[in-house]
Length: 141
Length: 416
Image (cartoon, rainbow over all chains, first blue to last red; front, side, top):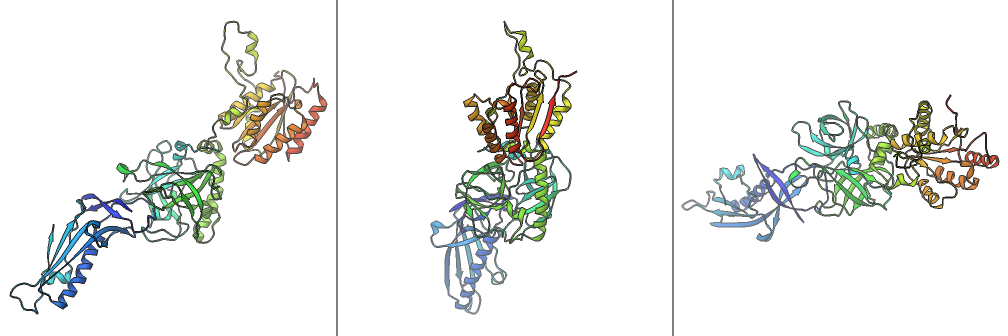
């Protein structure tokens, strides 16, 4: 079951198709526009976990792709990890690339690419504090 | 069974907004003078909210203080039973109230809500709309479980009217699927009025106060609440023998003297009529008046004038059929079961067989209630020239058999 919710980011309000994970049961008090904060937190949490692994393994190059649907939990938008790209509202690719000429001890770079499937749903990914120190770069497609 | 008049119900419903930024929160409704009931999750942690009533009731936004509420829950999840909050207006205004009923819906008829669901363009400022459901039963938490209706965000706090109980039995609280007609849940009004498990002590104490104030408010405006639940055709069940005289070619001048045309202004009996109006409105649920007087003294005109006044107050008022009118008798029999205030004039009561009169009055007594009192008024033809004294005695005996307590007796005399 899906439905459309209003989302506000700064002064911009747009609509997002949201997956219903509660079987439809919810109180029917009026709903205000949601924020994307919960979705951003989901992406950051997943990226942080993957980066921890790469820091230990130190591969020359690695990447992870995952899809996110947007769902509502406890009155807030959050990310719902899904298997197929067709199911997702956002496709996210995390890439690790060890810079040329750097020793194995030096940290590599992690690139995060976020591909929105729903045209209006653009999430900006901000690097976690630890990743910023390691020179993480971001690209938003 | 009654239908629900949405325009009248809407006058008792309010929109609730946040006081600081005006953000729409949900629905509520007037339960007693100055008091609004809604769901606890609608007001959340707010201590002050803005209340917007129907423009016909009050044309400016009002402020209300949250006085009592049930236990808090998690935002976005179902809140614990009973999920109710009471707020009091900070300014005094005149407003109608709903009739609160301490009972579950009967489960036969559709139950009806009116609130402010967020639809399409009116997402942030919905204009309000009705919704209907069927009652499925009571769930394990004590909520009324509803099916076959769509509960949309914004509807929380809407009154749930049971036409058979002729009152509000619940407060819409949650949905089983906002995009479907799976139904939802409502908090029972009985939790507020009678307390019980899960109802905080403060809310229960206030609920007892609201029970008293709600009853007083509804009795003071009985006709107003009955407008919310009209019964089609009810007024046609009794003969409303009053008409306007229109002079036609060949009209007899004698027509101008007929009581039902009321051509001659009705004078000098204003106090008698006022007394009888008060008898109707303040008497017990079933009371009988005997109106006596000499032939030509004006008993029929008096009855017609009283019926017109009570009809204007929302009563089902008129003359019952005579003994020979089979169709009229069947119609009048329906009046005995009507859940509305009734004034039934039995002209020439002595003509009726005592058994017939006793049966009719007993049915009226059994069907009478505080919100639907029954007031039969009977008038013997004439005391002085009574052709059937024994039958008049039998009719009087039938009345005495049916009604407990003192009866109203009024004698109509010719004006000096």
